[in-house]
Length: 146
Image (cartoon, rainbow, N blue to C red; front, side, top):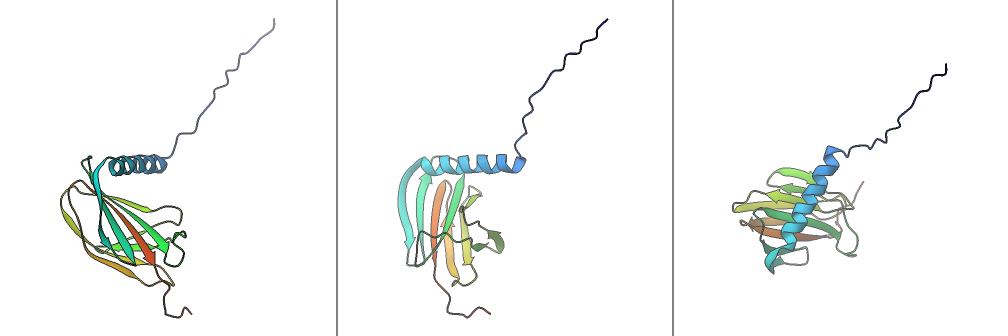
């Protein structure tokens, strides 16, 4: 008598991490909210930063921040950001995307990076359904690094 066993081979797929799923859906929601706008306007512009505002058709309000070198505006900088006392860190490969409550709010923002001058944006107001894109250009600091 001969015994035979059938072995079933199951293909297993690794489940995506919760963090990557959250990042993916956050990016999609910000992309959709900023791409479905009523109008676009520059609300503040100087040599250190520019703020571009659009009215979103979505419910939420969003802020997308990009940090660049002042001399070469193609170079991204992984700056630290102090927003109303809360410190956040961006990465060099991506911008900082924030979803804020859907009521009118005022922000004081300070952007910091070693070897660069700090940039301050005071009284940045975001209203319900606003999407703001803030492009910051950091100049070299005069202070000597030891």
